[in-house]
Amino acid sequence: MSKKNAPKKPLNKALQLSGAGLQMGIIIYVGFLLGKWLDVQFALTFLTETITLLAIFLAMYSLIKQANNINES
Image (cartoon, rainbow, N blue to C red):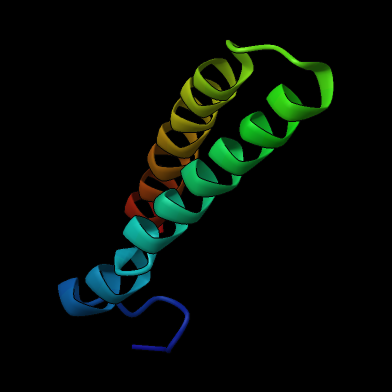
């Protein structure tokens, strides 16, 4: 078999997804920091929760898309 058509090992797929938790954590934390900063800048109280929630949805979308791409290859 050529290298292009060789089936990927399950371990290789696991390694590709191993950084997903860290990536999700970073996205959520950056969203939290952005919301906190915007709350201070505009003297509001709801932006931290709102932007953190949006960051969670973004992180989940990113994880699902990444898992689908790995599954297809």
